[in-house]
Length: 212
Image (tube, rainbow, N blue to C red; front, top):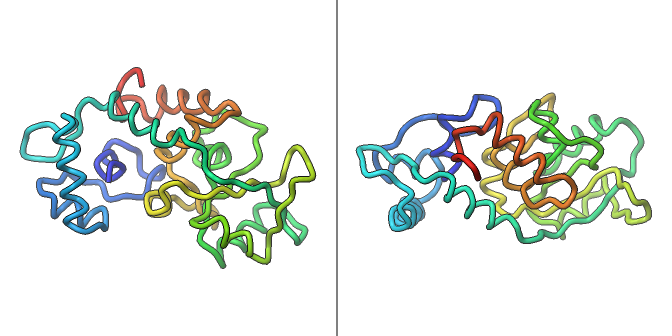
């Protein structure tokens, strides 16, 4: 729901979400496709913490502190496995076939490059899935820990609903949205903070607060 509230300040094409202002919890729930009860708990929590402005619409304030806490939730490690494709061909075509059969999306640095907001190169593509254990049974991929630089790293999404609802699409490939890239890269050990700070100083400047 935070993505929905931030969406009006994010350029179209970097986040899939409705772009509007919301006066009621019911309006926010409908836009975020969640139950009114879930939206009510979310709004109450924001108000209790002082992150919502008192006014006619639901407007975020103290964004820098809110962003710091949000990123902290993504600091914990999530399960991931290096994998390779069984069939030969370009990674673009193989991913395209994979996305045609399964729910997944590119994340982190490769996603940033696809959205033209990349800053870090040389890191293997990350493929986010809803359930890693189930995804490892997909016939197109097999685990491969035999090389230092895998072709692809499959990672379980920490917040799958937020990830898959906000994703963008480029040339038949599903791509994590810019907010998701910012959250996930902040704690990545391989130049992740560099990518995260780059987004904070460019496309997300003023959106998520200053000096986050």
